[in-house]
Image (cartoon, rainbow, N blue to C red; front, side, top):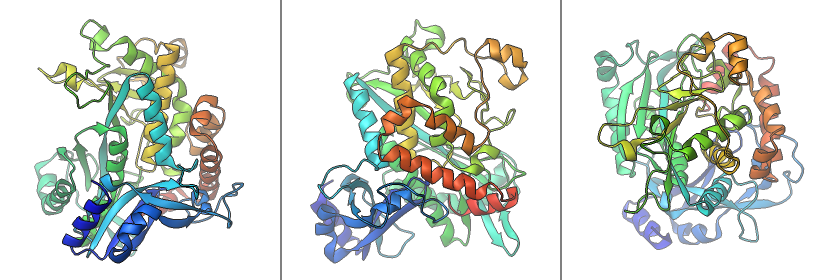
Length: 453
């Protein structure tokens, strides 16, 4: 896919506008749109955007960040490989963008560029990360008093399948038309809660897919007079929605015949390689700080509770759904290709480029330092005594966004990986959001997060 191909496809689809979209530090998908008549040149020269937008929080207020004010701009320059037609929006298409400075160089505050840097660091070590996210979300109706779940079906029930069948079929058909390969769908635990799992992709495409699915699900649901929310805890008395990250490490290009899954070792404990355990060690070591990127809203921490299958401790284990990292059972006959790890403390309020980039940076640090994650945990870590958790090096995850931001501010490795101005801008944006919701009721917090994600 190149510029000329995109222009041709846009003209054939009789598009009027093509959206140039990106995900900001607040986890909000934003952008501008080019009219079809200027699309060719806009794809080269980009669309201007104020530098201040990377200091814009999810509450539409500017955080004080040096250099990110009313002076100066960056350019939204789209990646042609991400072009899609939007069937749910009249005469519209969309691409995801890199943020470039006026010297046509990647801007240091660009989250997508941050992920590209971590991909390049992994490539130096002969590693390619492939990932896919479990997309959990609620379908709901807006009422005069708030939001009501779309239905009251039970987890995995046939009633749930039937209730949302028409909307889900349209969502899946739209995703398929946009090049997304669907793996599974199921009605989830909460009333009106759904889950879509897709095929893994290399890290950059995996992050793009997160945004594409958020946009598509919400856009299609809207055509049915229904709202879709990816917020972590949209209903305080119901199950939370995660964006669990499944990932694997591959030698060289993961699509080549010679590539192999570096997590898999048939002689290793549980079939996991030494590299895999070191990667786990790195993620666990940096997890309190990483949480600020993967669970990036105040609402996130109403989901991360002991005994809620969302993880609340720095523990890992085989098929342990209370562990922060689960090692899923591989599929019969596909052990080598299906071995993967699952990071559970992640939701859709996190910018996926920052979440995957931070995950990769933490894991690579574990490989470089050969960090030992300790013994896998085969019980719910919340059922262990405080003394037993301390003996095993298991710690409670941060219980608020502010606490996670404190951990990130103290993590020199992750701060260095993020770099400037991305790291200070991100911290400032998230501090502003945390402060804004500090005196809000849980109900008000849930209401405001419902429609943003």
